[in-house]
Length: 349
Image 1 (cartoon, rainbow, N blue to C red):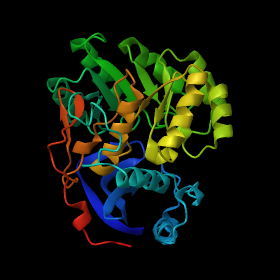
Image 2 (cartoon, rainbow, N blue to C red):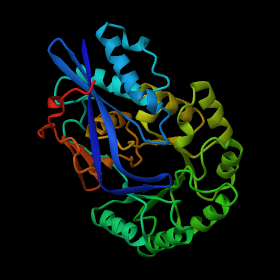
Image 3 (cartoon, one colour):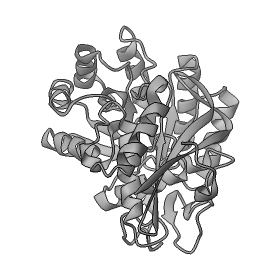
């Protein structure tokens, strides 16, 4: 096997605001595998201040991975526990290597272009006018589920924006999901949740920062809005994950495969959650279309009936061209569309 790394810098179409700051660029690394005339590709990328992968050791680990693979070390024997995004890239690169054609990693009605995946429309943080424009655009495009990033603006401004939505659209017409990214302080989180509750919110992701189990468990028990855990999942061992779910008892968990170590690791989370009667959905973690494609195909194979968070492929002005396309608030894979020339880029490692 021959292994190499290709570096690509994605440019956001607009400053993407979160409670941790504003994103303008994202560095991704493509793991390219070649064996017996076939080529596979997987995406390794992180989110600053969220991914647990050590940034100062990242390129070194990618280089070591290539050496190990070229020396025929079995992939399952390579320790990538501290680098979940690289584990995701390796897992998907191997699936790609074994795919029959056109990056169909999980052949299905989805990859045949017959059905789409229901997705939520994502509204990023920004000033009031910017957020209202995004909301209007999403509604015009037919989205019935909208996810708003909250926790960075003045709370009363965010509350006013949500009230405006509800004045025009009831929960029967528009499902509202909120994502605080840990932006609320534990001392006033319950007060904010109670003020949001009259707007008939479907759920709120990570109202307070991860690691505060007692406070989060109390919020989950008393909150008038169902709570979903997101960042709380990152970096936990399976034994610790079970204890965390049992203690906190959230309504939902959010699965981001590139932050959790891949599909096998994510499926372990699903089993643990379902044992505790906790529901889940999948969200991409700002991957390019390479990673998004793998996540979307895997997600479809799970047959969830909830809208998924897979609409991030339109964030960049220099994304890799792919068969993925959003239409009528659904993500489709149209096999007649061709992939961009990722493999023509010069290897970085």
